[in-house]
Image 1: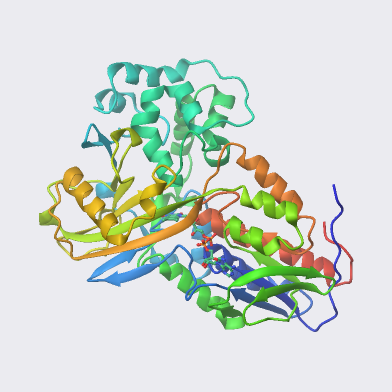
Image 2: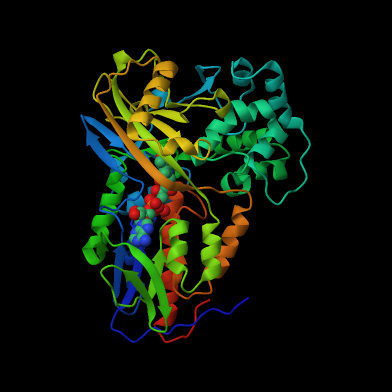
Length: 494
Ligand SMILES: Cc1cc2nc3c(=O)[nH]c(=O)nc-3n(C[C@H](O)[C@H](O)[C@H](O)COP(=O)(O)OP(=O)(O)OC[C@H]3O[C@@H](n4cnc5c(N)ncnc54)[C@H](O)[C@@H]3O)c2cc1C
């Protein structure tokens, strides 16, 4: 292995850190840098560079025709602590809103009809036998095959395995095709035949390894949770939470805190990073000659590859190996009287075997309050992803025609929308394919050879909002650690 590159920090009066990318990862990183700045013995200057006209990346809340519309992420999981912790630190705790328990269930399309996902079904596995037996989703043989998982011998230890292989092996083909594919594939907008289970849902592998069965592992976990003090966890918010005014509240609060001491430059697209003894210089238009002592790169992996290309060819090559999927969300508002389906759930997922042209429909105003005017419903329909890449590129009117046809057939909708918004997220969802963790290890080893350069974002250790916040904050802490090491004139890091 090559030894780390060495760069001494010039004895300027202050230390300069650049954060590239103003999505939630970059914002969390810039905010954390300032939170821990007091631990340095020199002043710190942070500049965040964002290519677009606003910060937030794939987050965007808009007010349209009396509806509160999320164009990207609409909520986050609460059993990972980082988003809730950050909300508490920046004064947003009182703005957190749990999901509405009245509608806390999901539907899946089966033979053209929306039916309820069996109670207690946890992404891959049933936990309530009676609910499974009553479900119209599976055949009698399919149900028996799933229930047999509890007594199936443990499989041989594997390096990595796709979600599809694991589910077929433990629960059978029906479980995969009729329910697990749309539930899990929907979260990652991925092809389950390529999705790495170890990189996305490792606890299911651990149940097999440690307990011998996923069903028994989940039951044991539920028994333990029942005996624990739930108030210490995120349980008071349910499994998902949002912010009262929409997800943009988070990015706005972070941005205004960052701006109190530091700089956010919009329309500032960085096209390259140069590394020299003087630190890191960013290539951009108009030219910027100020060198930085440290850089956090918080942009998608394929963009990060372009930035580091001039001094880290191997790193750039590995970053480009992470594939991305594109998704469009068609958001629409309707009078409840125009929908025959009672919509008594959070949403509908659609298996690929149903051969429809949409992936899922979220009944957004059933999940959270104040997302639609009284007597109305907000729907978010997902199109594209890794399973239907050709649909993403269609013009707006064709996408709307598809969504209209599908919603009319699936939900009995009469198409007289109060509004429609087409939100496109091109190459926004990194695909954690089999082998992902090994690839990330190689990327991290190559990055570690460059002092005070850290990569962060959804491409590495989790795509959800809490993971992105954690990734940005960890990057900031690593940079601060290295800067503290350097302020007394040490020559190298790592
Ligand atoms: C459609 C969709 C729905 C989702 N829903 C949820 C959800 O409900 N809950 C959840 O937890 N997660 C959800 N996710 C995942 C989560 O929202 C993302 O993983 C997360 O927001 C990514 O944040 P990021 O900052 O890493 O990247 P991004 O949001 O992609 O931000 C990167 C930023 O870098 C900027 N940039 C790029 N190149 C440059 C450059 N050269 N110079 C300067 N700036 C640059 C971009 O303009 C962008 O603002 C969803 C993702 C998508 C795509």
